[in-house]
Length: 284
Image 1 (cartoon, rainbow, N blue to C red):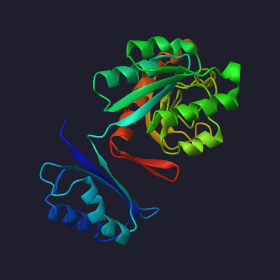
Image 2: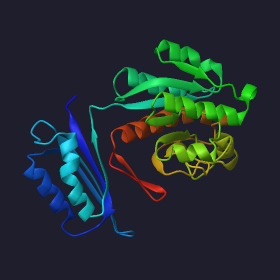
Image 3: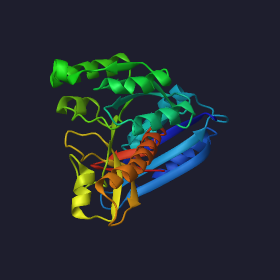
């Protein structure tokens, strides 16, 4: 895998901004292997993601940050520079449904997801069999035995101990407390089994069946204190018919869930997502 630096920028839109960044990169012999720009005309915000080959670049990561900072300050940038060779540490949280968990583990195992998965946390013990298969440490947090407050405190401690960069709720059917949502802001991803904003909350497939919809879907979004209302990263849909039962919707919907979640996680790992207000810019 070719090493690249990913330069991600969010700032007020200004004339000359792209030219200034491009000139900086040219001055340091940078080769841009992928370039993405977007301007939100309603808010006047500019978004950029450049992927830069390190082969010809005259700066290492530390020097790049030092040299680029004055330009970033001039244009009032929120920005970061990440190294594609540095893998993020991802924790997977799961309950009783295994399809999303196993799909992510398989994609990680085959190299499709460029990350490390040092821990799986479950509020039921059943997922340990999959953790064992992929040789990932598993921690069962027994909510019934110790109560929600202590359970979430234990999860928070585990995330810190394993130095987790991204937490993925792979059909983890517990509502995170506000304090943990704040702690994980922009660093926790959930998959909800409906095409949000339709059918938020519990039993969305039954809600969809009762409503007689012709499309069902799944939504990958960032976790916030407002249930199922975080910034949306990716969505997947599937057409259904009047003959589909609620059970059929569940079966078909699982395909949407694994697809949307896998795409959303990969976009985050590759620094393709910029959160703006309660929406996202996704350079997919």
